[in-house]
Amino acid sequence: MNEASTTILKSKIVEVCHKLYSRGLVAGTDGNVSARLQNGNILITPSSLNKGDVQAQSLILLAPDGKLIEGSGKPSTEVKMHLFIYTSRPDVNAVVHAHPPYATAFAAARLPIDAHVLPEIALMFGTIPLAPYATPSTEEVPQSIAPFVASSKALLLSNHGAVTFASDVHEAYLLMEKLEQAAHILFLAHLLGGAKALTENELDRLRALRKELYRKELFSIQGDLSQ
Ligand SMILES: [Zn+2]
Image 1 (cartoon, rainbow, N blue to C red):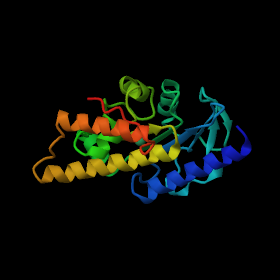
Image 2 (cartoon, rainbow, N blue to C red):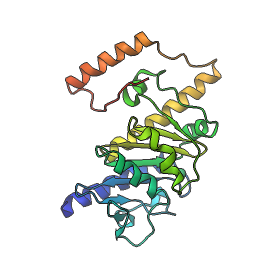
Image 3 (cartoon, rainbow, N blue to C red):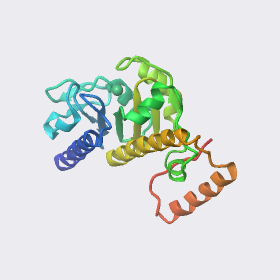
């Protein structure tokens, strides 16, 4: 990994941190963002820093096993969750963890977000599992998400927040933004009497559409549309 591409990746992480803060997806010093470099090392946000204040020089560089390579702060307290996701998913190069209000409300109520209500959410996510409660920053967090990481790209963490992961840090951010929007819409639909999930037949047609769009390279974000 040369210096120029590390610099570009750092600036992408900074941009995502600032978006997370400006869109209200995190508050205080909540949330953490990381990205994997081509050589396997990981850039991650430090603990105890508002995401609106993150700068390129704030980021911490870690070896794949979590050993500190460079940086003056402490890595995010959720570093174990990030490392676990990278170890489990060689295709993933970015992880975003946030506490978006509506998605976290679902997580606090321990209600799953039904990904089969809004077509673009079904296409983008497939499913959005709800991981059991785990004490933040401990080994319990990777253990709680372990059953779901292989087959999803977004998870709710019970009584805590949400995590999204993708091949690129902007894509992981977009998943978080869409997850929060879906949670907000489902919350509003609940007030109107409840959302109606798409039927199996409607989902089948979406699956066919996704295949077609993907073949034509009009749709870049993969979703497995699993049940
Ligand atoms: Zn958190």
